[in-house]
Image (cartoon, rainbow, N blue to C red):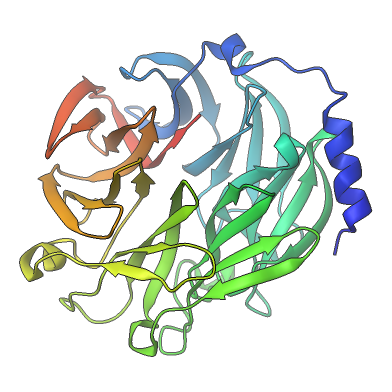
Length: 354
């Protein structure tokens, strides 16, 4: 495990490195990966109105990206069980470095920055043992791998940074192995959790669901004002109306949010993304073609229909969504306001706020 001294040294080094800012890349509001009409893949920087600010080619299908908090750098991750991640200079469009997962590992498609951007964290599968790992990479040393910590569970997927350099980690609970493709190997015994971990202190808190919901894989995260929202994907038989979104504050019990039975079943057991504002929580289901909106207290507010909708992000107190048909929308009340339709483009699962 990295030492506290090493962690603080990385933080101090970050303050001495001159940086460009996101303004040098046109001040994008979002990052999103897409497949284009010719079958190629790319990462785009977008304004709040959906205009392209930059396009960077990707060698294969992307999943999500994480944005550096200050410098115009993004890390684009391959879809599970991918073994590469691309560190991209979004101001110039050039590749800074291609990261390769260590032997016996693959990435899970998500990452986050710690220490004010000095440390990149990557969600990884140690697939021979099934242990979840968080890889640590030093940006100020050319994205050199500097160590790893435990994720607190199996199948870490999404993660986000909380104040105090704490990582919230969505451990989906599902064991996989690249020799078996995307096959899920432990559905009967899976144990998802939401874990809070730190580089210096390890796993600090683990939140599990009731045993009857052990097949509800915790996959994606959002946060606002200390409250973490988590989106889930049900691995049990359908049409079981399992809740697909939960809310948690550290030290407390999770609050699971439910809708009426018809809407719950319409989501087809699958929440693809989650976002939060001061008063709302949004989850998407491309399988169900719906956005579900909740209050921050967990109360159900509205259901909005849109085919193949999956990406959702909060920006300046407003919610935005993307779909596989090329659409970018702003969520207003209980409706979607179309901002742009890029007909020759299929947005992938996530849209990332900068």
